Image (cartoon, rainbow, N blue to C red; front, side, top):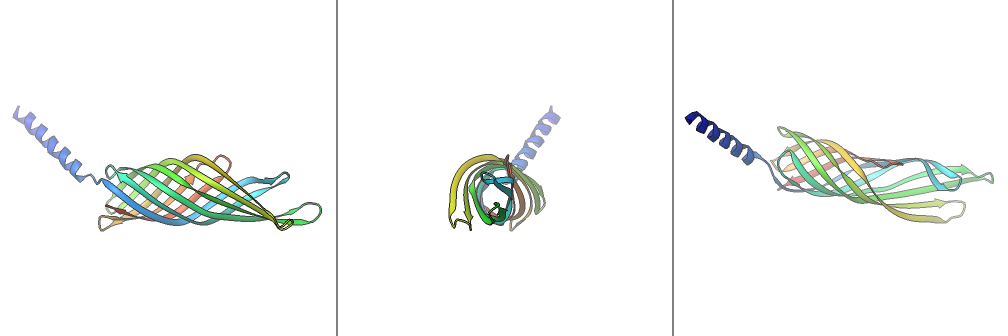
Amino acid sequence: MRLTIALIAALGLLSSAAFAGEESGFYAGAGVGQANLSVDGFDITDGLDYDFDADDTAFKVFGGWRFNKYISVELDYLDLGTMSDSETFDTGEGLVDVDTDIDVSGFAPYVVGTLPLGIFELSAKLGYVFYDVDFKVSSDATGESISESDSDEDLAYGVGAGMTFFDHLNVMLEYEVIDVTDADIDAFWLTGAWRF
């Protein structure tokens, strides 16, 4: 009986210690990186399409809540910049240069899993991105430009590796992918977050 009580008490103390050791709370941060967008057979107008491939500097701000040192939820605002590409077409009546600019920005809620390794940590995230896309196509043949906007939502995921300094400042390198059906969008990030 005493052994049973001692075991229950020991388990209770271990559980309390484990719970006390959980690192929970709010965090907020920002990141800068490089985003890339590639589209095979990007259709400009009837009969004019090409393989679009461009990148630009990207920015994001984010905030989240850590339930413990392993699991958190996060909301990001992403601005992937203006990705620009050009192509020269032979229309049969001469060469035409076409410039295409694509802006992508939106919000992304994530679930983040973290594996702490001392001051180092590895992470993986899974979420959904709700984003706006602005297209602008201009041609030197007409001197005019056509603009169009669209909204969409797609699965997103990423992995990261980082370090925590002073028990609060987390610096991380991340790679993220937005799983778009007809295009490839990915980004490399350097982020900093303060864990309150």
